[in-house]
Amino acid sequence: MPGKARPTELEIARLWLKGRGLADVTPTPMLAARLTVRRRARLGAAILPAAFLITTALVYVSALPIRSTDDGFGTQRSWSLVVLTALVAGLVLGLSLLNRWVRRVDKEAAADLPRRAAHSVRPGWRSVLGLPRTALLVITYAASAVLGTVALTMREGAARYAAVILLIGLCGVAVGTAVQLRHVFTHPVVADDEGSLRADLLMRVEDAREMAVPTVVWSLPVVSVFEAGLDPWNTGWLAFIMLSVVALVLITAWEGRNTLAAQRGAGIR
Image 1 (tube, helix red, strand yellow):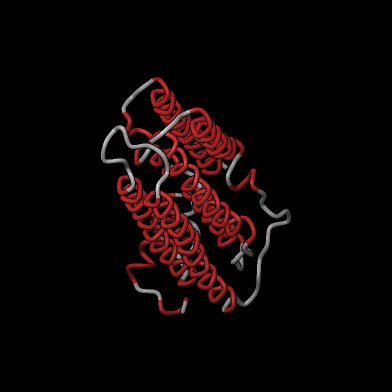
Image 2 (cartoon, helix red, strand yellow):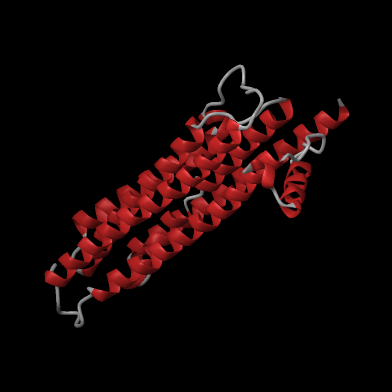
């Protein structure tokens, strides 16, 4: 499989290496195959959450009371929660299958290596994902869970139903993200020299950072919680989302400056 890389895939691999300060590394068919499957898997990983959010919104509105005087969880709402649970299971399964696809291509690429290179110390979550992004991810999920739980216990009617929808969706997204990150942190290195070893680490870092962006967590309140309008409670939700987005922008800018400085330092040496 790695020996059948197309010229366009090799060119994309060359540009990828050049853009990350690895212009001295040869774009091999193995690297091209690994980058190609990651691009396709990321497309699938973007489509799945989008479809999940759309169907979650449809499930939510399908069980809303027709009249404002209607209240309580009737048969229709109970049915909608069952459907939502099935959607959550489908999301986790879909993300797991995408990870299995990437893992299979990596395994096939590794099987063709004449020898295996490895890091002297296995990269941990600090070097792959980084402390700032890990903290942002944990805080975002924890704060969302707290806000949803408090809404469930303190609010009534449709607002409580929205909180249930949000919490079920949040659990599914959290499990799916954990499955993806576990694969990134634990899958074996696929490299046979120093250059491919650096490329493998960069792919691992990019995979982890892509998976750790809590886009779906920010979007879940939009499909349910904000339906009631911007009362003080929902204004708090909006402020939390905006602050976490700003934090991600600042972290990304800080990482970009550090990467640029490291590349310039390597060029001087």
